[in-house]
Length: 453
Image (cartoon, rainbow, N blue to C red; front, side, top):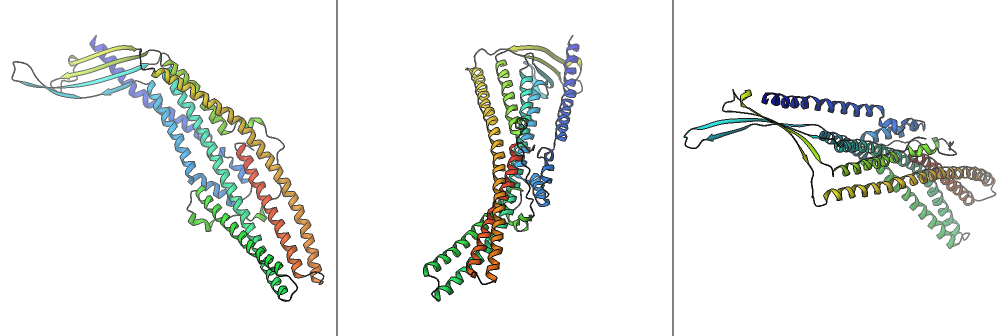
């Protein structure tokens, strides 16, 4: 009978050693398969960025994917969630331990000391009759999915920031170019005013006003340069590069950007519910519901199967003989009667957490609708503003053309011509701002739809 029990325990030991790595391998293969099915280039919809036809921007996005610290952190959180699945899953498997205990014994009325060694093999397995450990494993798997969706949402947000920052730099390049012309013209106006004032044609008040305009235009130029410097530094951080390298950053000219913007009339509601952040909170809510069920099962008995096989002998050569074996196989059921209301508090905590996540879920739903509507409206509004600025620029350009003809014929002064030119440059700045806003709004719509436009 002892031999049968010993063989049974040894069989359990061998079974656990074989099945545990197999389960881990299958789990890793499943995770790797899921990773292969959806890469970061897939869920950020890199093809959408390619349609913008800007190789510089594509380069910055791919660099950010590889080097951005937040993207790396999000990936590590996903890896942590995978490890948590493995750790939780381990509670469903048997635990086996092996030890060695050498000791010396001396019997009463005897002068001899005898050396012995015990080689215990112990196995225990919680019989998950009520599915408590199964629920915990299931919850950890769902939380892994939630973390994966959160990672996707974070990556899409970072890529969107790269695009928006890049286009703002392109805009600032153009604004600086135009502002430098304005500074040059205002300097010339100031010099003309000084000559006119010395000849008594222009008043001192007009001279002071011209000087003030010249100084303020220089301040505007400095502000544009400062904004561009800050934007370049921000882009460096986003792509995981040192700000010391910003002088090497290449970009397209604003004039080379397309002017035709395709604006959807409406957004399908299915796009909203497929947003990664929406799915992430949805999975968190599902996992929280399972956690409540597992917390309730903590009130049920815990049933364990226990086994031990020990070889005890006075020499290592004979320690594995069956006559020296001692084996035990049994089971235990444990139902805590009083734990200081810990299980009650644990259940309440899980219910409270579920209520919090439910509120977040409803807020995410409303926020998603608002964000999409705002992005779509901003896109349409800024496109209309851009078209109006284009018309105003064409009108002012034509007006400046006529003013130049008048100046060539001596009808108007150089001062009048410079003022018309400054008006043209000002409207061109408005057009550059509106054009950039359309691109940024386009990226905003891309972000709020979860990269599914």
